Length: 165
Image (cartoon, rainbow, N blue to C red; front, side):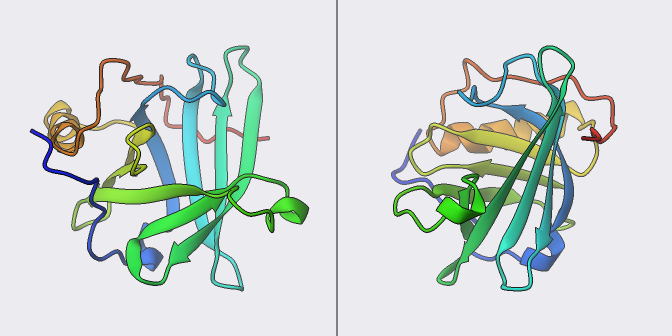
């Protein structure tokens, strides 16, 4: 049962969140092939306090793909960022950043559920390319509790390698 708005975690240690994550699953995205595989996201801190986002995968044609973006932490909600993948010269344009909210993360920062407050986008990330079924199920239950519909959930193929571009 949904009890209102989507909730991000109340506290996130950004330094612990940085690093490499494997995409375990996601809702469909218009900018990512449904058959993409070996999907990773790597986060690192820029000198100005923003977060460098480096997304990589093999697309449906087995071609390496990379999308570089920037995340801006919300100073009032540590579990929320605004992310853009526009070229750096266009990032000043208003309304071009998307919400990126960490909805759940374990205390060891090994698994994370990330979504948007409009419930259109959702990702399950892990530090390992595999995740135990019970852990995945628990995180997806959290998503359902927050009102996400998971009928179209995609589990990409993961070999554990990071795509080189």
